[in-house]
Each structure stands twice: as C-alpha cells, then as structure tokens.
Image (cartoon, rainbow, N blue to C red; front, side):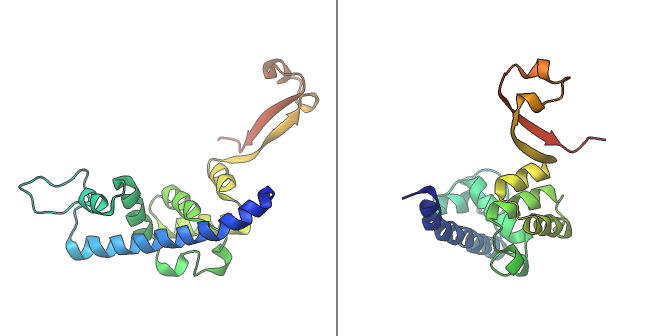
Length: 169
C-alpha cells in the first residue's frame, strides 16, 4: 500500500473523531448548565459540594484541558456553522475551528470570517495555522535564487528553507 491508501483509510475515522468531539462538547455544555458545574481549576474540596470541570473530567477519565476545550468549542459555535452542517466547511477540521476561535478574540463573526477564508483558499490545518500567523509561503529555495544580500547569512551551498511573511507595519 502507498501513503494515499493509508490516508484514505484514516480520513473517515478522523471525520468521525471530529463529530464525536462536537457531540462530547455539547454533552459537557448541557452538563455544565444543568448541574451548575463550576469552571475553575482543580477538583472540589472534601467540604465543598460544588462540582468542578476537573471533577467531570476525572469522571470521564480525560484530562481537564481536553474537556475544557470541548466545552469552549461547542459552547462558542452554534450547531448551524459546524462542518457537518455547512457544505462549504466540510473539509475543515476541529483544529481549523479551534484556531479560528482562538484567533477571533471571542467574536463569532470574526471566527466565521476566518473559517470562510480557510474554506475558500482550501487551506489544510497547517497551512491555515501559518496563514493566521501571517506566513504566506514556506519551502525550499535554491541558493542561487537568493538575493545577494542574504547569501552570506545562508551558510549553505545548495538549498535553503525559506519562510516569507507579510510585511509587518
């Protein structure tokens, strides 16, 4: 088998994993509301009856940061903008949504705009992450094609890895 065959076998499992993450997040959102689970670090003290997210994570046998991420992600995005409900977003992963949420400043319209850009430019997860960081291109360049001003710093004679970014103002 070749790489493409393994990728084809893995893709449906990855999509299912993302769907499960959304569903888990929805369950956690509901539990936090209904059981009045407190969002604070750690577990409850023995004299305290208030459930914490750490208690819930422990009961699920999961790390608290992972449960917190499921909660934040599902609580932030309404069901109608999730990848399984928006045809143009169907290639976007949980990771795309997570990056957009974090970069949006907590504003749903900003996150949706970022997701639309990722979908329209067909950016995979890593490409989207680089794009959000302002990088516009990464790759190998032949040493001969480098500007003469840069050649003394490259310290190579064949190829150099280069990352071009948008100009910082």
